[in-house]
Length: 489
Image (cartoon, rainbow, N blue to C red; front, side, top):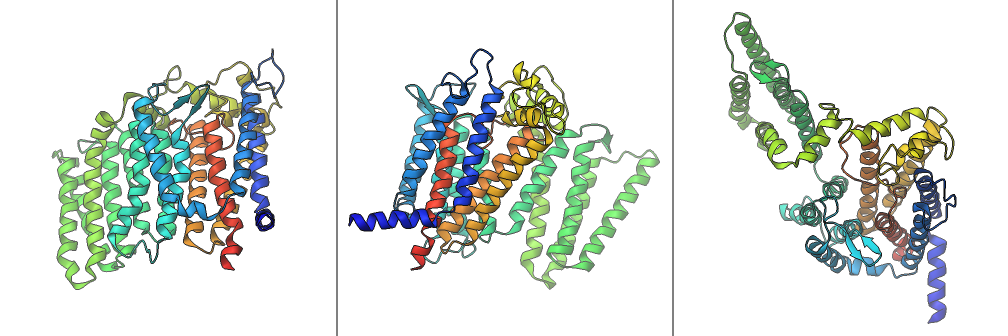
């Protein structure tokens, strides 16, 4: 019995994806070194001093490697067998966190256990990925087979999102939305992702461009109405594949635009809101009356999309002004360039961009970053760690870090595609989606392209919870992957 166990463990280590492990080690060690550079204290020069953030991070790394080894020595079957119970336990911990966690900068997302603070949302990532993978591995499960399957998948993703939002931790909640990319890989219609892209575009345009007034409408709302009309015509052409109907609607839009322009030129007041609503309603009625000669489903989707777009536009101002918190509004305004606020909400991002820009091509050298040493960038060892890399290692170092992440993500996708069960494939794509979202949003907010929402850079930002969460996430994947040949046999 003992001999069989040793043979099994030997087989696991022989089947491991060592390239992924090497990339993991490179990233976590580079992260600890970057933390040391970001928090370097002239009075304490040792990188391994436990009084330094880097020393504590090396401790987290050591514990993470221990956790990773324990996962690799475990039976791969337990991750599928106990996926739902693990998910339920993590959700329960999240519920408890809402009530017992202390208020830290307006957020109740950290459980304080003596000298250690843990963020359950970080561990919820692997639990949610396991539950989603378990669902897709159910007997005869097909996402498009019936509507209830969509409901079950959405429920698994949205439950942790709701609980984290109740903890007032918006950034961590948004990470789980990246799992919709996994649903797309498993057969979800691309219309869902297209709808999300349109919603983001409508929101940004409507909020950012307030002046000048065009036909009595703010420029942003005027532009969004034009976008809605453009999308409507494009869907008729590309989705419904009806060239004649798309042409007729486009001609109608053009004629209405010429008439409105002419009336405005001669001093006639044209109320923009009612003009656009009337034109869009007329085009929808035209398509509704004509669609009986064609496949109904595609035209219904196009009509619903146009109606939903208009309703979304009407909700933008209310959501921005009444649903979002004042600090969230300000962060969005700073990210969109509506306001600068260089001494307030825009301070971190402005100093971060200065640090990255000052690094040039090759950087100022390790421990020579002036922005870092003079503490101009707050939270530089956590969410803004990338600006340390940009300042001290320059463009070359920044690209090297991004290429290392790209190599890891591509390797995970490669692992996903060689899985022999939906469980392994879906779980692997969950890991890839989390990493892509974290990487894009973190670097986007550091260079001013995204609002600051407190998302760490995986393996680089200081903290035990994030590092342990990503380590567990990745090493469970490695354990599942190492057993793929065993499952084949």
